[in-house]
Image 1 (cartoon, helix red, strand yellow):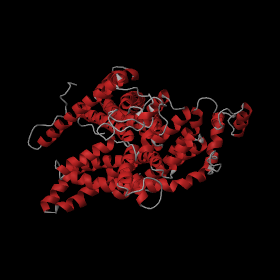
Image 2 (spheres, one colour; image 1 turned 90 degrees about the vertical axis):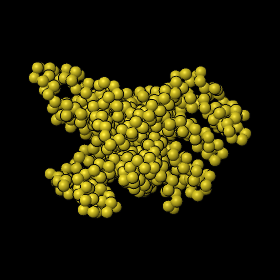
Image 3 (tube, each protein chain N blue to C red; image 1 turned 135 degrees about the vertical axis):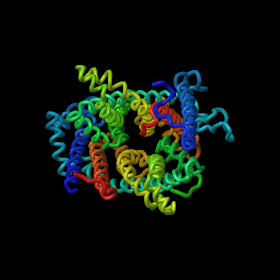
Length: 306
Length: 297
């Protein structure tokens, strides 16, 4: 167990190192001189030269990366050009809002999708099943930001029962969470439904039925427990999509998280901030997956890790 | 492959009746999806002829003009936007960018992903290890975040959009194809080809590649919809093809400020976008059922 966690941890470090290379390379994808990117349009050549030297852009690439990564390890992710502060601090300020939003979206989508998937499977081919599948199909095809705007239009503009943007009480969290969670909800509903259908045909379910166990208990005790593992897998895989969706959702709902920060930073050409945020979001994702991997062991005692 | 007959066709009996019914329903969805897509493709191809008005002609008098059926509306079927441009014509023209970017990006990422998946699955060991770790790294950065950062740095234009979306989408192909190749490698015909002295390149090209087409096409059909949503999201953030070229994402963004007074500017492009992706997904599901019903993605 410990050996397994250590191995996963090392792998995560490797992945993060890879991400750091991507993030480091980011400014070098720009056409022309990266130093010019950091300066306002029409900057003088002399100023560009000064910035180049100050940032070490005149040194060979591998040297630059070495400086970048050794600083990053010490918690120095560069300075935000717009906020004129260390980028790490700016991001850490915005990170709690993003964590809150992503988890709330995760919760909303699971709270809707798991029961819906179960009902669809148990009452197969019933109107409930069709309604659930219809919702799931539409959910997968709807862009998060447009759904967000439609929710604002309906609940904030017309019904005036929920706020359209900003962060505040729990009422501010509802619309963004629903919008962000919708694609995951669609996916999980389908997954739970098909998983349940498989499990309800298993021998142990037939045995339980033969023993006279109530149908409700069969679903809750036998079937639900066995659906947890694919569920955890899909949540782990989809958490990246959730984080990506958060970038858009935060922009739509003016939610003060890292996603909106990145979009604003791109507009402001604050590339150090974009780099740092990308690195930290990837770190958040890697950490979540690490936790989920450990969770597997508790969910399925059959899994033995060497 | 004999077309509509698939190897996994379930036997007809009472238990299977429900499944067959659903497949029929599914194929009806596939038909519906194909027809809708055909319409959208025609719109994209003949936008200039079909569109009732010039999509970029500004007409201040028709600002936020209400759509037909609403009181005070009617000049434009779907109303006018904040600059008085015809929303319907802009939607018709916007189909071009969505389809072009969606299909090109899916093709590019498909080629890249299938290639890497073939290599990883066939050669195994170090090659596999390197490619799969690259996949892990790519997955650790949310696609949309990476796309925003890259397009933001490289500059928002059609070429960069296709390039960035194409490069970021390879993982799902590579992982699936790798799995297929791993099992193909053990088959007797590959072993036989190997024993006969066929080189790696010949085996990959003649014996392995033809067998990974099906999963690749199925993933590809689903990825087109995903790419269209991604492109529209980038356009929504102002990182798509730049104005005045109409794109669905940018149209939705345009309407944001007028949600209370002129919701049609935001609603209609989104509905068409959703219907298009839905149609692509239907078609993809249908393709999967026809090509390989056992494939679950």
